[in-house]
Image 1 (cartoon, protein in one colour):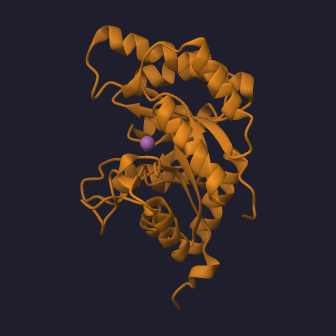
Image 2 (tube, helix red, strand yellow; image 1 turned 45 degrees about the horizontal axis):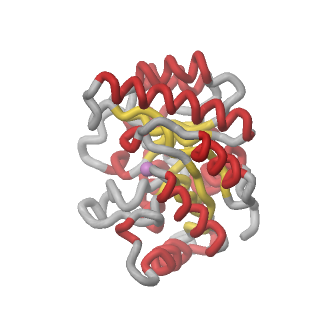
Amino acid sequence: MPEKKEDIWLVDTHTHLNDEAFAGEGEAEAALARAHEVGVRQIINHGDTMASSALAVKLARQFPGVYAGVGIHPEEARELTQEDTDQLTAWAALPGVVCIGEIGLDYHWVKDVDQRALQRRIFVEQLDLARQLHLPVCIHDREAHGDTLAILQKEGQGIRGVLHCYSGSWETAQEFLKLGFYLGVDGPLTFKKAAKLPDIVRQMPLDRLLVETDAPYMAPVPHRGQRNEPAFVRCVAEKVAQLRGLPLAEIAARTTQNARDLYGLPTQI
Ligand code: NI
């Protein structure tokens, strides 16, 4: 029997309706409406820069079921000023702001040694800020698994969070899980060349799994190549359900519980 949409409650824990891809009049609102249609009831927009963090905060205040992460992404790395820290702290006090993110390391796009050192420095600074503010972190780790793990092992005490769009090995995944971190999976799980990710999703504890879109990028099959959007997180959850041999409703319930546990999301909107 097909599952009724009202039985499903999904959370897209990593998305970017604050991206310019949704900047057109009414576009973010329309994307939210399409998400609600398929049971995606809560979403978290993450900032990459101070400006996009400000927009994430604005959307969280504007729409019910929409929350924000604030922080500086490694591809946008620059020295953090006192003004930045004060602003991040002020945002963190607002009710819809649920994490520091996205932060982390990106060695795929950034090859320069000094720029990578800067990424590591502001990653650690933002981890410290998250600890002080009692907020979880959302971590971007692209081709920097060793350094990300080493930094979290050394500097991550007392910090909870997620390795968003996880792309490492099962061995590294186990190390992150040991530290108490969650793993977020996105569109690449549905791709034909998904490599290690399906095996990781089959083996990992379900109470550490989050489903995400990272919209507007990396739309899952069958939307691959289109602009991604929060509604499509349902395709990611369906793939998880298939890999685990469980009904979609159960995967939805489990991953939503995880989103609540990590980000403190309300059970009602
Ligand atoms: Ni992202």
